[in-house]
Length: 414
Image (cartoon, rainbow, N blue to C red; front, side, top):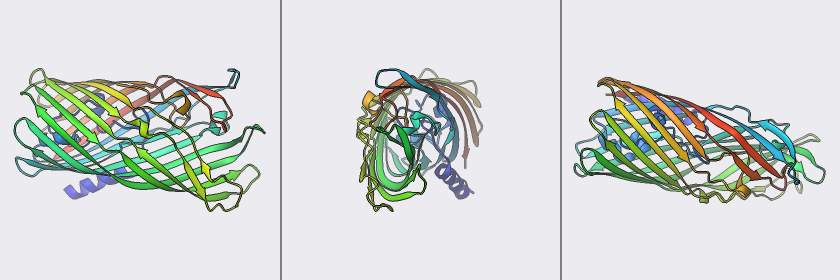
C-alpha cells in the first residue's frame, strides 16, 4: 500500500501542469500548510513536506509518513504598450491559464539518529498566455516551463541541538515558447514560431538546524544551481503558408538559493516562523537559442538571442501557527518578493513586478491522518520593460496583476 501511494503521488507531481508562484519562475507552494504560512515553514513537526521546505527538519518526523499536496494558481493581469514617442498603442490582459503545483513526499525514520526522505515537487515553473492577434504576441503569446524536482534525502540528528541533511536533486524541465515573428520595416507579422523541448539535469542540497533551547531554533538550506542543456524542436509557420522546421539548442541555468529561517515557540500552542530566501537570479543573463539543420536552408537565422540580465533578489516571509486543540489548528502568513527583472530584461514570458502574498489556512489531524487547506492572494504589482528590436512596441507596462491561490494537503502515518 505504501509503495502504491508513493508511486501515485510521484506520478501526479510529474504529470501535472505547473505555474509560477514566486518572483521569476520560482515556486514556493509545496503544501497547503506552507501556502498558509507564506512559505515560512522550515520547522514543522511531523510534516513530510519538510523534504521540500527544510530537509534537516525531517528529523522532526516520527515513524513513517506520506503526503500529497495540490495547489491551484490562477494568474490575472493587464498591460499597456507604447510606441517610440510614448504614445499608447494597445491595452489588453493575459489569457487566464491556471495550473497546479503538485507535491508528493515520503519520510521514514530509520532509527533515533537517521532519517530518509524523498519528494517530488516543482521548484521552477511558469505559464503565461496572451491573445495571438495582439502586439504583445510579437514578444510572446504562449510560454510554459513545466518543472519537477525529485529529491532523495538523508538526514542525521547529532544531538538535541543539531540536525543536518544532504540530498540529491533530479530536475526535469519541459519548455515551450510561442510567438509571432514581426518584421520591423514592413511593420507586420510574417509568421508564428514554436520552440519545444525538455531536459534532465542533476543538482544537490544541504541543510542544518540548531536549537538554542525548547523555544528558539534556526536553520539554513542551500540548493545548488542546475544547468540544463536543452535540445528542442523549432517550427515556423510563415504567413504565406507552409512550415519550416529546425533543430534548436540552448542552455538554461536555474539559480542556486539560500534559505535562512528562525522559529520561536511562544508556548505549546503557538509558534512564529521567519524566513529569508536569497535567489541568484543573475544566472538568468540571457535566453539564447541556436538553430541548425533547417528544412528550408537560408531562411532562418542561426541564433535567436534575448538578453535578460536579471538581478539576484530576496524573498521574505512570516508565518504564524496556532493549535486550538490536539486536532485543530489555524495558520496565517505574509510574503514579500523583490522584483529581479530589470527594465531592459523584461518580457511577456514573465511580466511580473514585486509581489506581496497574503494567506490563511486550517488543519485537522488525528493519530493517523492530517488534512490542511489554504487560501492565498498574491498582489503581483507593476512592471515596466523595454521592447526588443523584433517587437511591435517600444515599451510595455504590466499592471493590476494578481494570482488567486487555493491549496489542499493530505498526510497519512503508517
